[in-house]
Length: 394
Image (cartoon, rainbow, N blue to C red; front, top):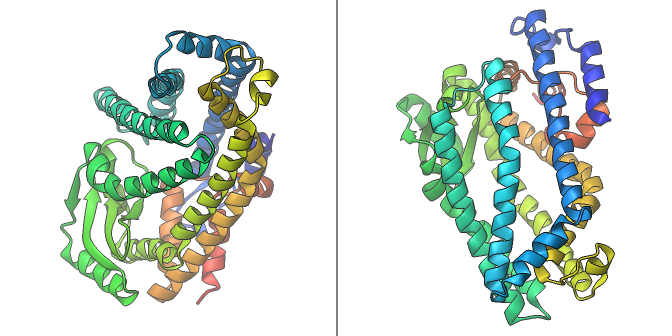
């Protein structure tokens, strides 16, 4: 419902060039943006609907019961059964989602000039992703199920602690182990830009180890920049597409925004909030899984821990759905704080405004989202609103 409310609002207002974008976009580009957003929205609806139908058929159509009984029939040890159970489910989900991913990449993104990935590179990424996800699932499932088996009454506490440690570990090693499997990272050759970045970061006591360029253009023309690393020492990663699109002042403004997230401790706050919800959720899951309520309700013939996990995840997704707007509200607040920080650090709001204009223009971003849709789905404030708010800072 909100998707089509958003499309109607965009069609009504979407061909008007905002004052902040004059000289950067025209009516033809706005019409192309409308087409892109509309096509992605319709495809997203079909993809989401298909996924929901498959899940409902699996849960309520008896497929979960059959699958669960089939795995149980092998009478493998508890941990082995669980690992196989979740691995096959993961593979099935990937296989079912792959046609949608292919259509999105090679049809929609290609049509609007964003896709640059070749079928060979896509297949290579797919194989690497499958291997990595398999390793991660095996580790998480094996350790998690071992904790369940070792501590039947308190496993939810130990599992929560393990997930926390593992997620922090992945945040640390991913930039050095996983990301280089997909992209090439090279030090930027523009020494003046690197010196300006390090000088700006030193002013706010963020130590930059290196500034790297990532060859993102071999997959997409979309742009980005981000920090990696835990603690005060950071690596700064700039997409090559970003370096081609923006001047040095605009790049510095984008990085000042990212620095704002670190200095305002947004990452830590999000981790704390997520872990608090996870702690509560795991305790509630433990209490429910102590009973036969789920297996009786969903008519699961063979009672297993794994089937209960799937049912808990299904119920949890429904319970958490209304909470999503709250998470996005918090995220938008963080983005505003980071924008203010960037303006103060650079002592200029125009550079960040220009960067946002270019990012929106080149990514065909919807400049006129419906307020209700933005409130429910947007993790960032609408771009026109962001620019106007920043211009009031200085």
